[in-house]
Amino acid sequence: MTLPSKPTPAGAPRGQTIDLAKVKSFLLSSLTKVMDSSENLSSEQRRLATQQNLAQIYARTGLNLTKDVREKLIKEVLDELSGFGPIQPLLDDDEITEVMVNGPNNVYVERLGKVIKTNVTFENNDHILRVIDRIVSPLGRRIDYDRPTVDARLPDGSRVNAVVPPVAIDGPSVTIRKFSRERLTVSQLVAIGSLTESMAEFLNACVIARFNILISGGTGSGKTTLLNILSGFIPEDERIVTIEDAAELQLQQDHVVRLETKQPNADGSGGVTIRDLVRNSLRMRPDRIVVGEVRGGEALDMLQAMNTGHDGSLTTLHANAPRDAISRLETMTLMAGIELPIKVVREQVASAVDLIVHQSRLRDGARKVTQITEVAGMEGDTIVLTDIYKFEQTGVSQEGNVLGELKPTGIRPLFSPRLEAAGFKLRPEIFGINVAEMLVQNRRPARGR
Image (cartoon, rainbow, N blue to C red; front, side, top):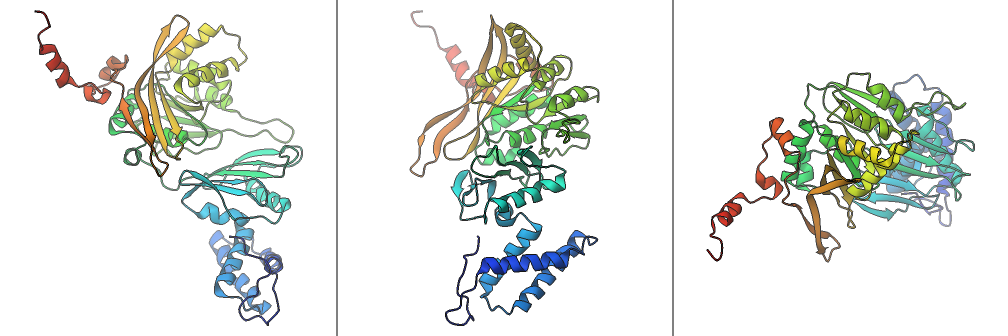
C-alpha cells in the first residue's frame, strides 16, 4: 500500500528515476500551504477543495506517471492530510477488525479472525507520532514523554490505544479496535454458529426477566458485541444507563443515558472513573445499568447495586472461564479498599450474579459462546456453578477449522421458577430434556417384577 521509491514511470526520459517519496512530500507540503486558509469551509467543501487543489498542484509538476501510480500517490497524500496516513486504507477495509502498529515496518491486522502482517510501512517513528497526534489532538487528549499512554475513541466509535517512549521501548505503538458499521443481530450470531436458537431464546428470557448477567471472555473474543446484542433484549419502556471507558455500545432503545469516563487533566485533577459513574448512576433512577467492562473497585459498587433492587444489570470482564470470572470478580471487589472477609465477598457475588455467559475466540479465529453457566448459590465457602450450555470440541478440520457442537447439558436451572413468574415457561427441549423419551422410560416395567 505504500508506494515503492524511485520507480521509472511511463513517459519519463530513459535512465531518469523519480523519487516518489520526495514527490509525495512536495505535494503534501504544497497542499498544506494552500489549505491553511480553508478552515471556515464545511467538511464536504474542504474535501472537494482539497481534491481540486491537489490535482492542480500535481499538474504543475509536469510528471507523467502511469494512472495506477498517480492514483496511489494522490490517495496517499489525501490520507496523510485528512486521514491517518498509511493505515487509512486498513481502516477503510470492512474485513479488517483490528489494526496493530508495532513500529514503522511492522503493521499487523486482524482480518476475518486471523492476525496477519501487512506490507504497510511508515517513514520512521516520527511519522507514527504524527499520526498518533492527529488521532488524539481533536479528542482533547495528549501523549508525550510525561504521559506516554492514551486511550481514545475515533468519531466512528473505533477504540484507540497508543503507547510511546519511554514506555514503548522499541518505538511508538498503536492499536485500533475498529467499530463495526453494521450492528450484528442475534439472528446473525445464530447463522454463523456463535450460539444456537435455543441459547438465544434462553438468554432473551433471562434479560427480560431481569437477571443479572456477567459476560466473560478473553481479549478480542467478542464480549462487547454480545453485550450489545443482549442489551437489545431490554424492553423499550425501561430507562437504561450505560457506563463505558470508551463508548462502543449501540443500544437502539430511546430511553438511554450514555456515560463515558474522563481522563484527568494535565495537573492530575478532573478525572472521572468507572467507579464514579457507577455510583452516580444509582442516583439517576435507572431500570437497568449496563457497564461496558468492570476491571477494578467498581465491582463492589456494581454488586451492591445488583443486591439492592437494580436487577437486570449487565457487564463484561476478562476471564478464561466462568470459574475464573468469579475469582476475578472477587479480586476486583477487594480492590475497592474495603476490608471484607472472603466469605462475605463470595456471598455478595453469589447473591448478585445470576448467569455467566462465556465468550471464546477459538483457534481458527471464530468467536463463539462456549458456556452459559448458572450461579447456583453457595455450598460452604464455595460458589456453586452449573453449566446450562457448553461447547464440546470434537476435532479440527483439514482447513484448520475447529469442529464441535454447542448443546445443552440437560440440566434445568434452579432459577426456572423466576423465569416462569416473569411469564417464560421455556420448553424442556431448550435445556436438552427429551420429555417423550422420559415418558417411555417411566412406562417400562421394572426388572424382576
